[in-house]
Image (cartoon, rainbow, N blue to C red; front, side):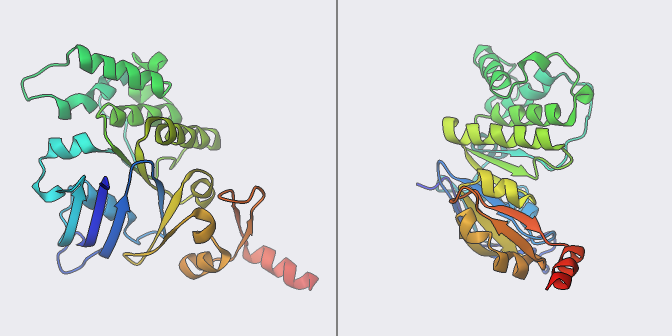
Length: 270
């Protein structure tokens, strides 16, 4: 059974102005999908609809065969965890306290953290390389450290699916690689299915097993990175010329935007 299925989903913030239209999507164990497309095409709206934060106006969203609309918030949170696009420093919580918040879906309203909860917290701190930061104020961390702590909080929910909305936004290059390496490990070694919104097409090509391309609220294409990331498709969807190289073949395509300056230089040589 698929972990996630969307059937002809229509969703938006005003009922008469849908942002996503007729979206079909299926996510299975072992999938690492990159959700790509221009700004405003509906990627973040799709994630909110999957989690039930935004109700579908039409169609159906299913988690392991159950309609999201019929699940409680805690039931949804035990199946799907979200790493949002931005995460402010917030209050003066330690990293461990922040990660412990991920255990709330597994607790009754009057319960406190027990031994099993503490073991889960210890395990995800170790897995994400944040154990040595456990007692630090999360507001004092670097961007990369904070992002790993937020991922650890999501993992503390023990989800089957991890949704990420531009997880490397505002991070420098070494932390971007660090985050995607962690996601790859979670997917390959822990079996967590991942749906990740990203604008970085090169990271999408390097790490994702498949890409979902959205345009104007609709799912335009699904396939392997080498199938989706062609010069013609990128030109049509993003309106930009690119050079594409496949040094290692397979998924390892490299995409380089061609600026107006570069095009003029090429034309002059011709």
